[in-house]
Image (cartoon, rainbow, N blue to C red; front, side, top):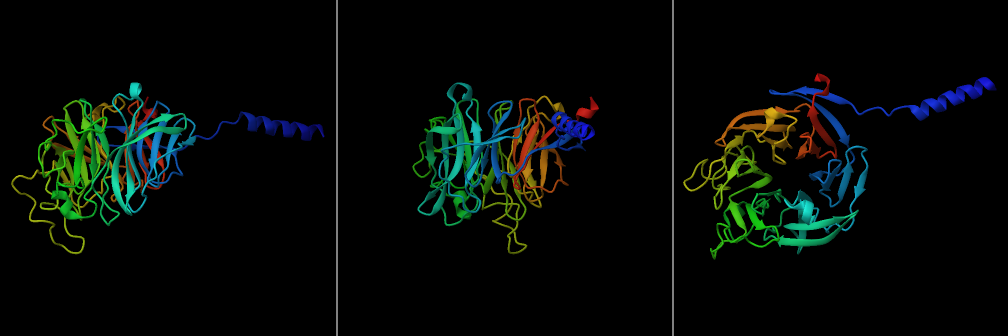
Length: 378
């Protein structure tokens, strides 16, 4: 009996003092750095947007309508109460999230989501505050004029400049003429003040036949938007049709051509979309992708963890399933492209940078990964 008791005690001690196994970490080489990839969380439902609330708290929107806070240290997930009722049909639902530039003092979180308007979806820009585990003071700042009978091409990403403006994007909603129709918001990048009012210096503010919120137009489905605070430039990435995804440098009042000009082909045959690839008065992309990678996000890297990546554009690719890295020169020209994690086999959706300069990304399969420097090299 003493022997049995000793064995039981030994087993209990082993259980009590055992250390949980760490999640596997894989090491990869890029053209410029060596990095490690780690799975942080899984079991989410199409995590569409992400933003860090603190060094440990990652707020995540899920397209079906939920919003959760993930503790990146222990993996715990907290579901936030009182989210808006979303129109989760097709590509629509709860979309992007971003912190206001004055978040530390104001507490405002900005969202884009799809609202049911007479059984059709319309993209909304909203803001709210977070009190413990629930939203308070939810405000729909702009219910866009973007409804169509389709459930495609909602956009939509959010970014801010340094002058107190919020930008967000809306796709053409599956109706090509919307790209050139300035009496609706579809197929456009919009610019508002933080309170939802229209800035007095918007490019079409005094035009009777143009909605005043429009900053640029002629876009197909812009699912990436990021403001470069170093060079004061607004970058956008959008889906083309069959081929012809575009990286664009966005200028106030500019027309980016969809569907009049495009580098893509029709889905139903080997015919070019539109009139040509160029037309006077319409902007050319900085970079095109043929075949399409299907971009799901856009981030300008600025962290200290990967100095050689600073100023690079990163986007998640949905169709070709990788992270796309584009190197820019000072003139804003694309001089190099690299495709990371092509063998991961995941539709990569959102990208966000942590305070350490590590890169976190989500996948449509409900996973959150992080990229950090190769610690074994230290």
